[in-house]
Structure formats: C-alpha cells, structure tokens
Image (cartoon, rainbow, N blue to C red; front, top):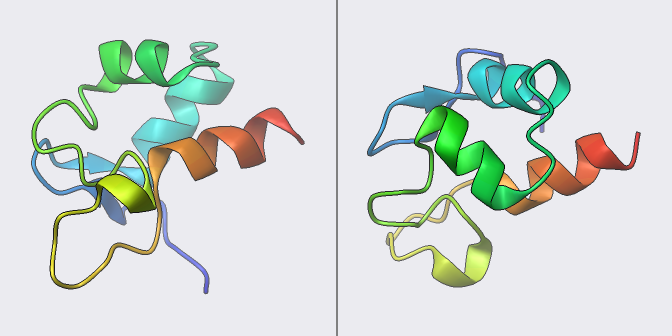
Length: 74
C-alpha cells in the first residue's frame, strides 16, 4: 500500500507522514524519542507507535517505529 505525504499517521496529534519523514531526514530524529520530541507524534494514546500498542479497533497501516526503521535502513 502506498501512502501520500498528507496521510495522518498520528491521529491524536494530527501528524502527517510528510512531517515524520521531514523530522527523520532533515532534523535527524533517528530514535523514537527524538521523533516524538520534534513532532509530538505518539505522545497521546500511543497507538501510532507500534502495532502492539495500537488500541484502536481498526488497526493503523503505518507505525512510527516501522517508518523510523525503514528510513534509517535506506
């Protein structure tokens, strides 16, 4: 599945995929903690952090830890 840059990864804080990628690539957020500090993503309910923490009935398609891993491995 392909996601647009305006796809909202963190629903609670309204953080988009584009903002997350910018924080990782341009602001050098290479850890979950740094990413959360820069974007506020994953700091409310935590469902967007990883699949195991997803408390929603309909599971999310993207998680912060997976995005970090993919970009850091490029």
